[in-house]
Amino acid sequence: KSRWALVPGSITIVMTLIGTLLTSLVITREWERGTMEALFASPVSRLQILLSKLVPYYLLAMLSMMLCTLAGVWLFGVPLRGSAGALALLTTAFLMPALGQGLLVSSLFRSQLPAAMTGFLSGLMPSLILSGLLFDIQSMPKAIQYITYLIPARYFNVSLQTLFLAGDVWPLFIESMAYMAGLGGLFFILTYRRLVKRLD
Image (cartoon, rainbow, N blue to C red; front, side):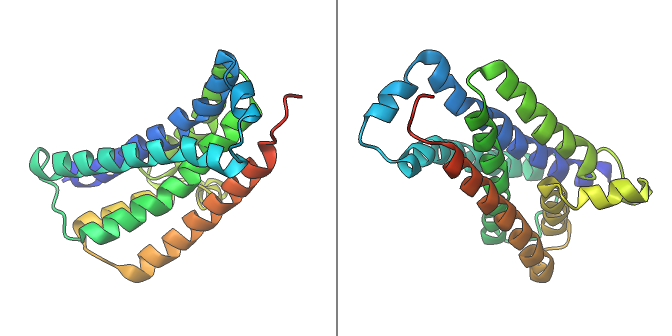
């Protein structure tokens, strides 16, 4: 049944929307509203600023994952053969690069429009086209297939399909989570170095 593959892929897109597209606006919104100067003048550290922007969207994404999973199971009849713990771990691992990429994009701009466009082109479009949701990866040209290995949504999409349809396959999950967590850590380090408490 096609919906058994489409529903996990759709959940991947929802997580990308929350993780990358929405967070790409959080820091630029502060610049546009003129409140970033107040944040820089306060005694909060760079890490505390990043966490204050990160935690709400992480909680929102986890709530959305729960609602999407319930909708997939009860409305679309997709079987859930894996465990809730594995689902939470996989979602957390995917949100690390998604949120990290969004924060990095947001730290590069002081206007929401270019930040939103960059988040859309660098986060949402690759997740739609190269994750295996719309197009079968094995039917893509070899060069494009290699590029898909750089896209976190590919690992998350395959892991979700496995979790829903086959159950907990931990060797696959651990490999996918290791890559996603590593890429997420790189994004957070770059964002932390980029966000310097000065106005120039």
